[in-house]
Amino acid sequence: MTLEELETTLPNVLHDAEVTGITINYEQRNLVLNIAVWVGDMGDTREKREAYKNGHIEISGLLVMESPDPNYPFKTGSLKIDSCDLSKSFDRKLLDSLPTDAFFRSLWVSEWNAFIHIAATAAQIRWNDEAVVYRGPGEQGHPRKHWAPCEVIDP
Image (tube, rainbow, N blue to C red; front, top):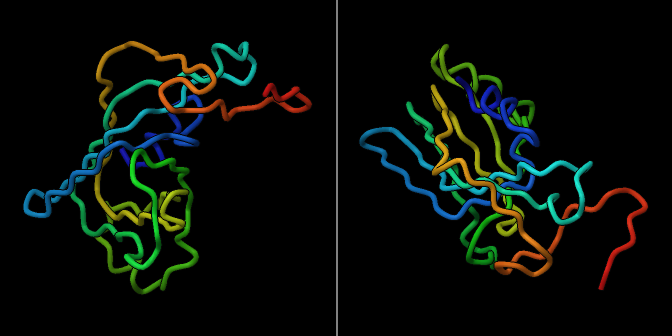
């Protein structure tokens, strides 16, 4: 399964997912992202909208992962990500040099003001458990961030 295919199994793809840890093992060619996936529904009540599920994404057959710019004063702690397809921004020869079974995907990291670019051959998600965590305003250091159109923002 590619990372993009994995995303289609999630209610909000990887939009506003939070990465709490990154482990790269170049010898085994794998990457593990410890992640809290936003599984809330904008149609739910405000109390249930900020629903997250903890797990980890395992990416195998890792070929490359680009790191953040070391000159950017990025924040520490969890990283909010959104996935995207930036393949048109890369040299076609570079992408054509990947094995035929490889995928290429980019993750925008807000706190780094940069992308993580991943080329690999497989991705899967494993949930830590079946529990969904509902975050209220300011709970666990996470302010509410998913607002419905025309919704009044409470102080």
